[in-house]
Amino acid sequence: MPATEFRTEDWADYRMDYAHPHREIEPLEREIAVVQKALEALHEASALPHTRYDHDLMLAHRRAAAELFEIPWTAISPRMGRLLYAVNAIARPENMIAAGVFCGFTFISNAGAAVGPGACYQAKNLIGIEIDPDSAALAERNVRRIDPTGAARIVAADAVPFVADFPDPVNLLYLDADGDSTTGKGVYLDILEGCYDDMPPGSLVLAHNSVNCAGMLRRYLAFVRDPAHFRASVNVIFDPEGLEVSVK
Image (cartoon, rainbow, N blue to C red; front, side, top):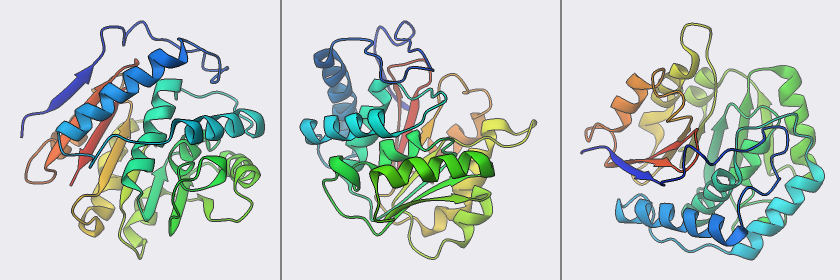
């Protein structure tokens, strides 16, 4: 399976202010069009069954996060936030785990398709894992403001043993964690290997920083691009961070 890539011409120039994640970078119509083309690339690679999602629900989700979340900073651009929401809204994972969620914004970008004002389906488990206890507490406070039911939750834990011990199939795994000073983003592979055998066919893995941390992710990218492990993997490059989307 050759590695597949979706890249926009403006990916390197599309830059956000990390301290103001909801500040408009481009017209909304342009954002929607770019993300739609990325979804079409994922569909063509058989990573997604279709490309349809509710744009109004996505904006309702975005407004809630902007109004209710305390976000010290984030590298999740508006394009990336829309893509994460759309992938979850389309795939509708029963069990979604996000590893490395900091203040919870990356987590709700995924989980917002199943809880809060942007919900379009009901999930069984929506779990965000954050190893730093203070960040995990902030993320949990943020998530509770959008989802008072507790369906979505944050766990202060090391993602590697957590996913290995998770009792249910993992239908979507989002990776944005950091290991120690030697492994860095290379910990993605350790996390994935912990639950790989419990991921049924059609499960998705979304790995943030596939561009700006590609060096640290060499082993991870080689693993997900190997047809012995995943039937398709697409590197979506429409901002300087990137997202590798792999389907088992």
